[in-house]
Image 1 (cartoon, one colour):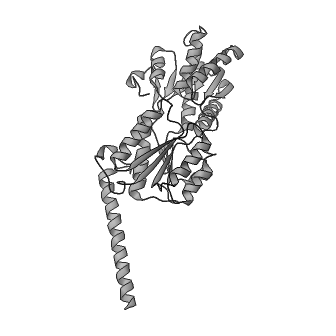
Image 2 (cartoon, rainbow, N blue to C red; image 1 turned 90 degrees about the horizontal axis):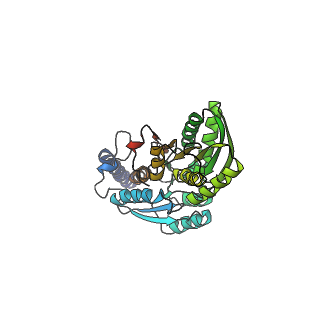
Length: 345
């Protein structure tokens, strides 16, 4: 009868669903740790749910010192798990990146991992992916709270916290007073906005007498940071400190100071990243400290989130729980710098 046929079909569907759930649970038991994160050390080959999947990896640029080791680490783990990673380089051009998302969507990817040039400007393209049913992981560059619903997760550093930690470094180094400048990354990028906001908000919270007299963006370029610092040394002869939004920029400021014959340590330098050059300056006492953001850890965090989403079959409007998947951000100063030497980038 029709009723018997329907009942049989429902039983078959239920059995298939139970089987799928059991398979995911089995994978979870073998790959996930007690916190529900993917344990990369347990990946020795293709994983069910990941094998054969297509991952579009879109980076704001591939030429920054931090980028290559991060990209390589991400790709290593995702491809070991059985997926195919296709890399797109936006060359710090948000319009190009928007076009690249269209290009990626044309290949029917199973997931997009996006390191955005500009998290706000890229949202129309992200919404296209959402409407196409393609999950997007925001990697290293978060979106505005109201736009999170178009993405499935964030993986990377808490850039606002990085700015706050840098402010604490500077406040202590200057005894809570003096003029400082912030050499920023890419104007409009989430990391640039949040690191400056975190820095300035923390100074207010501390009741610090430190005054931010200048802020200027650089495209994360050391040579540009050096030129900016050269200008600041003339404009602000009493400048007491510089927050480089990554170590590369702080080192660029140091180059200008060297060329001007300024005594090491006279102008306090703080960075983010724990780069090889930054760690060397801290070791020598020329830089106060940095917030460690290790590239391989960033690549691993992104890989963990992407692999988890593929295993669980997350599709928009679903989101991973937790949505925020944050990197650890150890503080590095002269007391523990040896633990982080020589650095990765």
